[in-house]
Image (cartoon, rainbow, N blue to C red; front, top):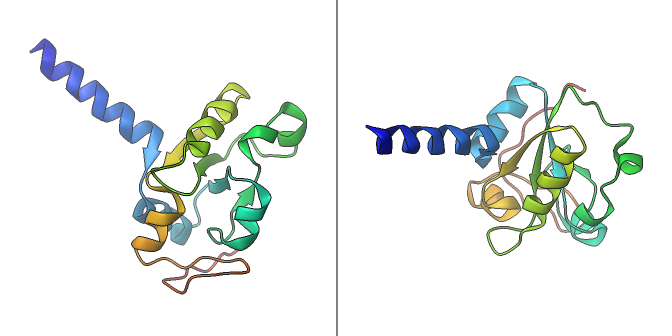
Length: 133
């Protein structure tokens, strides 16, 4: 029984701290309080990013650089994909700064793999949602 409880806690924690692209897309469609946060450097964001995302490279995350952000929102940190840990570093920094945070599984690569559009100088066509903001 003890092993089963450990597994339950493990999976509950994963769901509390991670989300996949389809969950994020659905959250955007519903107009919920999720904000995509691209933790890569500006040139990566400029080239391609999730629509409505904001960009704060993890290396630049400080109280000063995040002071205008709404702490009632949940920030979903992402980077290139499974070969990049900028989203993990960003999620850790944002959590330490007092924000509610999740990490996007697979980053922008899995976002595109699931068929969702991106914006930027080299955008990818795909499913789009409408932002009411």
